Figure 1 (cartoon, helix red, strand yellow):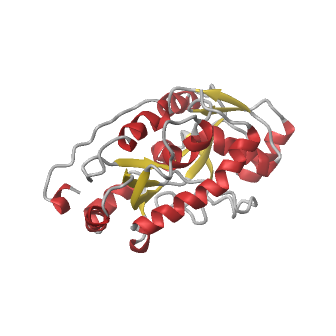
Figure 2 (tube, rainbow, N blue to C red; figure 1 turned 90 degrees about the vertical axis):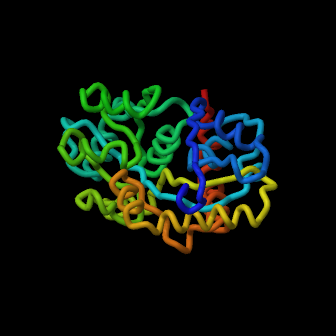
Length: 272
């Protein structure tokens, strides 16, 4: 966005507590358009139901634009006997509670999606918490765990080389960079959708003209063919032009809260 805005854009990685530390910082920052958050499904949907936060994930932010979409993949160790999603579900039902699924800590995205998967398929498995996606993938490659739910971007290279089995992409359409992986719809589990989408927010109270300028910079940047291609290579798909608006981001966030919060609360999922 630095070219569109004509000034430097500094990336500050405020890690910790599934993005709540960075979110808190932005929520408390001056609403002048100079401090933003590149948030996502975890920070601005899931965390609102799994954490006790010092801010409101909706009311304390001003939406700027949807940025990119990244569907969730269900991937397994290469030695699993199941060759496709129906066979995997059958195997899980034959071995209830025995399979292990790597998650990035209690209350994380994989925990929520895994719970959602169990509910919709009638399966049961064990969650194994880790401190991030990298050690999960390491143990999956080594065969220490059976499965994980992850962003396409996190497992694309390993799936392409056959190091892991990609059972399904949890989206309405196949992923362009992994056309051989069927959707859950195609695999007989309809409407099983989950995505780690990203958006850009400012603190609440940011003037509308500032939001409009930031949104215009997003639109200009994502229209650059080189930027668009780089997103795709990283497993991220920029949202269509008509979704690159504050209104579309607000609608996406609210729709996802309506879907996921009841699932999270019914399962009693809480962050550690």
